[in-house]
Image (cartoon, rainbow over all chains, first blue to last red; front, side, top):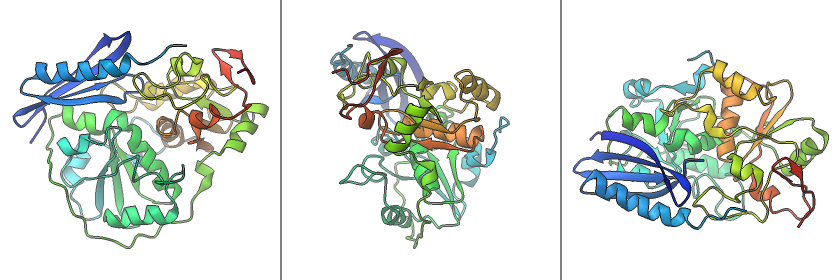
Length: 71
Length: 288
């Protein structure tokens, strides 16, 4: 088994930067959303397509990021 | 490797592909996200969970000598074996594991340059099979505490400027704008940094592919903040893991003599009653 289609991109969600990494392992797409600095994983998801896995990760991570308070 | 002071502490992914199954080699994956290993890992690698296997489960501390011996025995590591550690997010928590291995005197411990990200992005072989290593009788050396900083040393360094304090968190954490990295639970009462600390975020030491920057770039990065090895250095972050990455860079890639990791970090200092705190660049000592 090898990771196929490894991809990484940045976006902004709830006012915070987010990295989305995705790749295919076997028949399943995997996605991970992290908070860029320091890069802690906020959500790890799977899906039948890259889009499905990434959308789930973005939604879950976005909910966590939205709780972060600036002082 | 890139003119590092101690290139023997790093291997590249191709080396792992060639030697990962050698009899004396034990591969260990240590991730920020402990679920990552289960989706696929380098064949032959065992996993160590940073939050349950690389920390005392009751008191806040790193592993005791006995706990470290048990972990390495169960993982099939011999005292004279080659321990190869890798992980996600530029080897963030892999460096935490290496720091503890050095504290307990394991002679040959190395990081995989680029870690899990580089292995995956290169399309190298992965497996979900979990190995069952043959148990060893590992005996560690007494802890070398010259690699670790405790609160009194940090207080002295801050008050007397006898050592350089390097805060490796993000600028927003350093300034006090946020109390924890975005999306993570707040684990301190106050935001800001230890007075006198310089801010060099840990991730600046890594390239986009997760590998370490070349020695010249690292020297320029840290030297630009007055971290040049002429004074002892104390690295800290929030809970001591990010700073173990910077500790590794300064100690082994740049070869500074006196570098310690303050693993109490901001979750200790930022919760202390009456501790001086700087926010932004302005002293806010003892301010509620």
